[in-house]
Image (cartoon, rainbow, N blue to C red; front, side, top):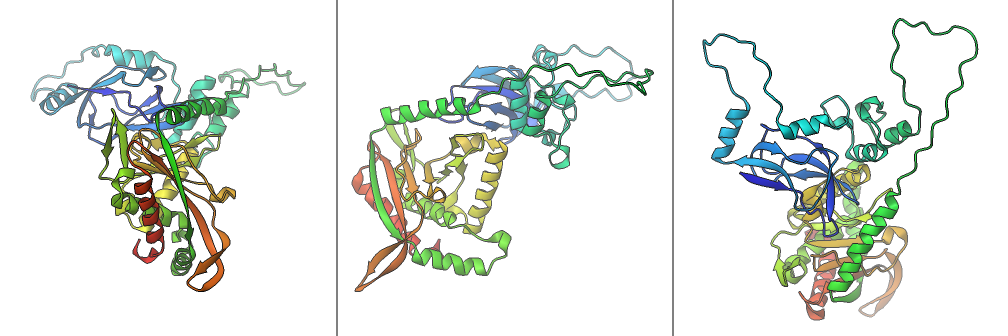
Length: 419
């Protein structure tokens, strides 16, 4: 047997709420399958399982909030999985007479789940409701079975749930009772207003705790340099001219790839500080700081950026931003980042010196590209220039190694055709 525990979906997470189970006892699962939807203070996360086997028992029912490390379910693995699957789906003996027997008693764990008020639509297809809508429905105590979805293919959205929370409940149909055909309609009884849930305040509290921990525990050092982006932007313009509009690249994919390749050259920037020691990572999973519509920031990872083409990075970035906006992320994207990038160039900021996300040991910041006087050889002219910064953990590296890291990023951006 193996235990499936409430995972730590980020250094700032202390507890999570199980919004939905996507499996039931007897279901076979394999490593990487999404088995549950968990709500944290910062996001709604689709949680993957990291072992292959058969679900034996669900311990924590939907709607319950538990600390990180709590047993959520029990998994049968290896030979146990085969036996569990056989027990979960018994076959009647051949040629045996068919006997109508009473249904077996429901296991206690399943009974607890079935006994809870249904906060999801009756249809089993989970694409009909977004995890964010499920989270809001639970907070506002809205029965999703009564909510009409207006999203794609009838999916229930956050707006649908909030609309249902502020509207009077739909009365049950009354067959065989004729509706009045004349006279004024009775005045509707006013409904008490639903108190808004301050998601922004909760988000700020979580971010404040994480950043305070980072500044308290991590001895930061900061470096910055200006990078001439004329070659990178010239190459990007020419490359996009050859591509269909839907496949064009943003200059941010060049930054992502350059940081990932530089992390291979200076491995002290890529990994984690755990239990008093630095643990380098062979894989480069780059966290991207993305603003959330309801307020706050989150930094999910794009996996294996160093091994992806620019087109693949662009597709991954588009998909990630889309799912962040929709409130649909996976646990591996939250927990796997080995180094993080933040960019405020779109907001008009020329430089940013960020705070490291523990247990990572480095964060790279990029500002907006601006026209600046630039001397090259004996010539001076206007060039597109960008400020790049590094926030480093002095326990894992020093200013010398940090400088080499920024220099590697600059060099790589001068050869965009090789990224």
